[in-house]
Length: 147
Image (cartoon, rainbow, N blue to C red; front, side, top):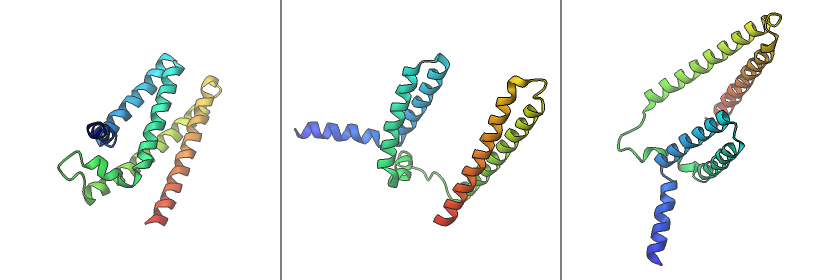
């Protein structure tokens, strides 16, 4: 009995490995893409089920996610400088992406008489930009309040 429980504990510890979670995330993304390209609902359902399982594991271990992902390597992953650079790059990327989406939406809507089939795409770009703004300001308010 003792060896069986040891094997079970070893298998469960694999699920807490940062490398396993990364590989599973890539696999789930591949399933999404394959399911969408092949228009196969069963592959998409499998991806959703795996995503739910992964979300449950991440939620259970939400307090020690940093340790899970950093314990695989023996070196320090990042310091404050790297973190600041990443934050600035992410903010710049979000700003540029939203600006490009807004400008593309304006161009598509402006060409609605010539290309009426693309009008929905223009409105979708506007909506996605608005949702990005809402997400950004909500996250900013949350982290301002938290820290």
